[in-house]
Image (tube, rainbow, N blue to C red; front, side, top):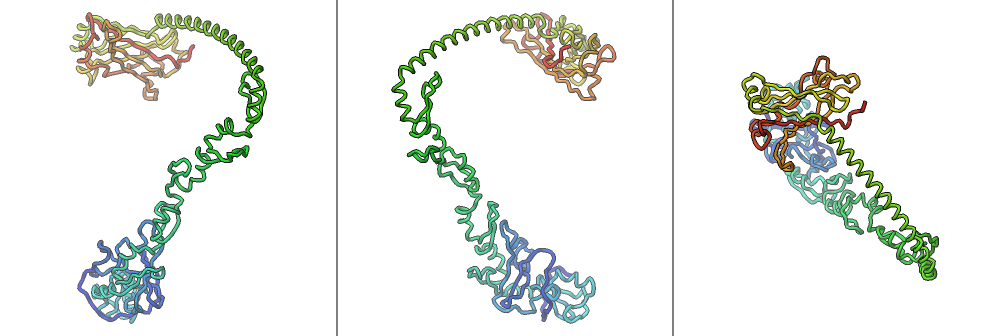
Length: 492
């Protein structure tokens, strides 16, 4: 069958079928003055249906955000039966004409008609699918039928052509819509601004007491905690209402009906009473209050003397603790300071491959801890060779291994010490290794089976160019400090 762009064709058509709902794209119902319901044809053109013989774009009324109702179309005159499709009973949409009998149907209804029995539903004349033509002229005639606004009953005075209806409906202020702020209320579009400014529970407002911005539906909840909200005095004094944030101050200093404690209550006076009675009490009991106050001052002096003695004793204890800590740090300090002498000679051996790796003496993480050893590739290892110095550590078999927790999981910090004479100006190179105790790393971190495990650490510990600067190498000697964080290590 030809697409809906062939030559126009004309011929008589009438319809008597009862209107039914069409499947596919939703269409607003259409009615004539007689009240009969039909569907409004839609155009697939992108210019809003003003070309190609359709009415309305693919968007149409009812697809915009917030539009909630279907649209009925009211014709100015009685709708002639010839404009109805005999298959679906609705207004013809992209009409096609049968050459054999001159009747028409919607182009979208034609496949169903041809699928079972290719006959005209009006006169049962056999239809040849090769003799069905698009009737553009008839579509134009349909598009030029006169219509009212679908909401003329609501007061819209607009009239025009069917072709123009959808464009009008998209802007008609009598159409029902939902609140764009999603409060769920429906109203005519002309009331949108009033609803948005005055009625919508989702609108933004200012608290009339504290002036903060809030959502209208949360106003009641806010007023329960608003510091400026006026609340009644619980004693029902003359002030009656006071800002919530000032209520305590009002009760303590202003309310004449509030029971107050004597200003000397903290020193032992037990009197309580109203503000007026309190003034009389303070004036009458000045001598008593002075006696109470003097006794409190004497007791305070004694307490202060006791506190001074306790502070002095605590300071002596702290000095002793500091001395012990300093002694322990000097005794134990870092787990290893590795002195690498004859650096140039060992670097040359590493470059030539004669001795690419050197090893430190073994050391313990603590008194009865893990046994470790360091190794260094002064000219780099693997892909780092010639660019970086590589530094590694390995776990060695130790006497206390059966008593220790495995796998090894403690942070290790490497320091290449800057030997600058000004200790405060030293810029050590630091690298931290935090072991990952996953199953794949057990050969590195698990309890040693042989003399020692495979090494792990920093293949790119320090750039060779950087090592040659500052005082990292002095008197042909390098120092490497190793610290193992044993803070979380369980004591044996």
